[in-house]
Length: 383
Image (cartoon, rainbow, N blue to C red; front, side, top):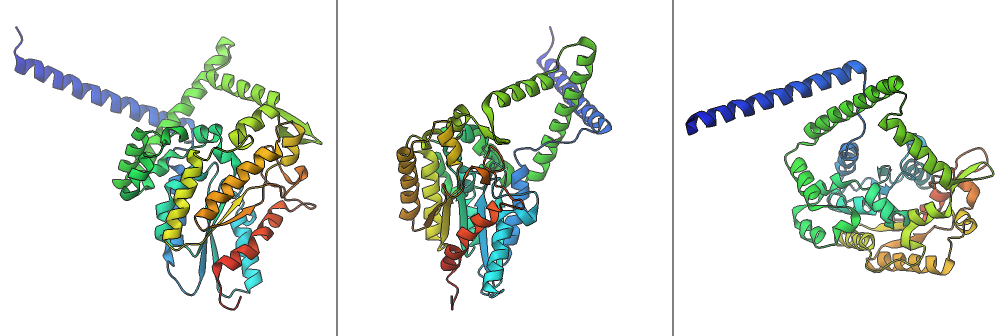
């Protein structure tokens, strides 16, 4: 009969061998992906890493009397890969021109693709700590839909929630926003332990392995004559897009089914107990207690397309707008309703990004709506 000590020794040797095997496989897979040239995709921490630098710049001149700092919050309609065409840059240029550089104006972009109200609520404490002179907050009715909450959620920003705000967050029905307690604890731990870089490296390597797997699948599919999983997903995505995108004078527009999914119950009357609405109100209350003025504007919607595909009920939509306005103004912030600002031809694509060409400068026109309210909220002496 084997002694307990010998069994324990055998178990320890087995576990050590297993760990070495896992490390060996991981190392080999990582090297193969590099040799194959597989590039990492985005991880959950990519927007966190991206915005860390912005918050550092925003906080650098905190409480400065010589300049005015504006934090511009938004999603991909605010964010732009071409910096000179982003709305924050256009607003900064317009304000500097109007004010003739006195005082100096800096507009910092707290925007990223698919960054909605929930994500900005999660970082509200950091914004309050940075104490900008003004917050301009772009909101969209797409941020309220279940499609947005479940598929465009940047859950890693839960790691930015301060300990004193955790009871408030956990006390809300966060499951409706696609947030889970295990994610909250995971990202709280990663950021508290300063492990963003290490975790990102791990996720990058996992992404490389996934891309190498897709390449191997595509290669073997050439021999078997069957589509790989990646090609199947691409074909399914193309089919779904073809079925739900229509053409209007060459412009791509969504059908009724997709528009209803994108806007959710904001088209039929927003629920006063909606989680996203609650988070917006809580963030605005925090900014008010911190003495930070806020302008919240409702992003332009393609009203023409909604009417064309038969999903526009102006009365129900007006009810949602009124509820959003009430939430904003109850917290002492200024509300700008820009949802009906533009006609169909002002929208570049079905998702609602704006046109900028020789005939139409929709982004410039939107910024023009923000200039006077922004100057008024900055309370610049002599203006």
